[in-house]
Image 1: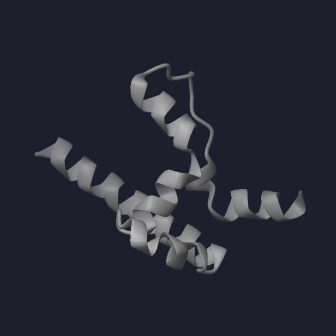
Image 2 (image 1 turned 90 degrees about the horizontal axis):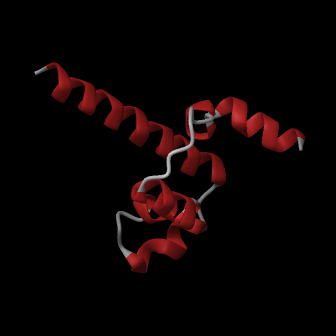
Image 3 (image 1 turned 90 degrees about the vertical axis):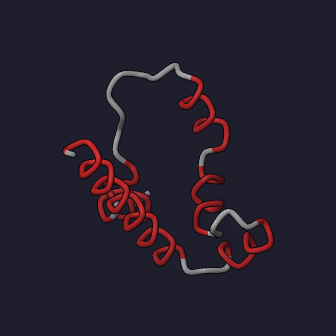
Length: 82
């Protein structure tokens, strides 16, 4: 439990609670596939690289996911501001 708490604090943006429940098709897709999407993204959507990703240190994976999430947020913000 302590390990989980530490992870959720260190990588807060990945584990943040959502506001109101989202019943959309996209939300259901995300619930259905959960962490698989993150592994798939880290494998650059290449099924032959899934085993390589799952062998990587957990903290390296979470750091990469934080980077991807923040980069996407910045890009979306730039698009909205144009």
